[in-house]
Length: 202
Image (cartoon, rainbow, N blue to C red):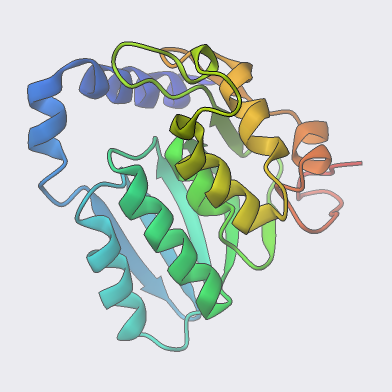
């Protein structure tokens, strides 16, 4: 993990660890969208407001067919992020990570919404368990309803929920596992194989 990713995660975990800060930041605009031709570049955290921000931008730029995630440390509102992911999938948009992209936690879930999902070499994707503030996801039995929201979204995006179970066992909620190329291939996180300068997943 490079210095940029370390700084991003320190900020994200600091937000999640402070309930008052978490509530405050969930109600201000933390998501920026920049349009360049047929690409929409997204920067920032996803929260309660992100769905409306992104959808409004895309509806006003119907030529966009690809969403590029850049620096996206996570989500403060999983339900809204999953809602946005389903909107993107319904529109048939593709998702892409640049070589300098750092995408973690709930932002990885949004990346999964792409009809085609591509990743450049050196892009970083981080996953971990979720927590309700008292328990880790892995503390709940596999048939517990607490898993349904996240597992169902992953299944809807990838066709099965294997990746969900991988993420919640990859690292605790206050840590991060940075995915390797073979992880991306094994769980279908990316849809196409590439050669240099794009990450090879062979």
